[in-house]
Length: 425
Image (cartoon, rainbow, N blue to C red):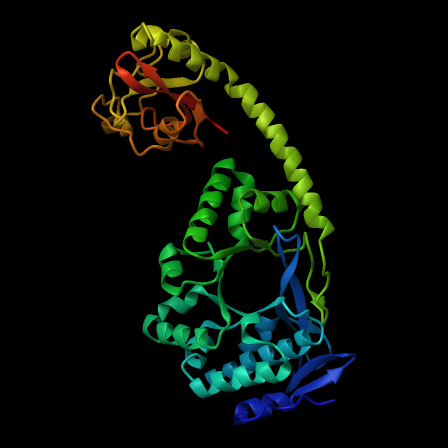
């Protein structure tokens, strides 16, 4: 069985189609002594609990039938023309294998070499031929996700033209391996990818450090605000899967959910593995909330006592019990504009316990204004309700802390009472 060329195919495309052949129920391609095959790895959506797409991965065998690295195949190509043809052939092969198995909605993720993307994206005739080929095979362009790495950004002028041309075809763009090497958000703002694929190295570091896990969650949030969906690659264990779900990525890919399968798309429908991850994370969150509540309970109680005493006592007297608790860095009282209405208070007898000389310019400044801080704004939004922040670096002590705060009416007007508490986890 031979593949059929779409109308108007260019000479290169005709040659590539001739190299495709059906074997054992799936398409393969020959280039000289090399045999090329497709494997597919599922991409799962956490909210939907099922595969929403599949990444096509190249598998290569040499003349003796031994599996070799795809890199070895591409390294033996001696010219850009050969590289472009091989890259194009791989995508053609993957599409042929994909359309025979996929449902009517799932995405096909295809890798494309940065140089090939920039060059091919400026060849309008080649782009038109690609669109016609997809249509002839029954794959609408809106189901195609082209993955490009950040190397593409080194060719900014040609890159912008290529992105504009490729986007006109109706496909989606995914920025691959974000977080590896010298990644920065300038690339996100520049390319406006529909999907950002986070490199596994970020996941490894986040699993080893609660602090980095919190940063990863903020990175995901920022990528969402930039208008991108976030896919985390290389998820291999349940602990990694729970962290991925916890930092709110949209999609995951990795051995924990499905390995690349030769010629087959793998599991479809609701994933039992993802449902189990949801249940495990729910349980872990419940345990974490209990431990957290027990840890902060004495500080909440002491803050409420101090709040009540502010009705008829100065700040120093109102906060005696609060300042005596272990781990309290500082207590302070703010007006409705976030300004200090009294000198911040350190625990008695240890005035210098938190002062790192490197941060002395950010010491206990009574003229500071904290109106933009979350603990201040949230307290004003819910007077009388104790608020607690995420961990962050305290400017009062150059140490990690959380801030408890509560807005309360006093004879002098509305005030926000705050306390910074050590947080080492």
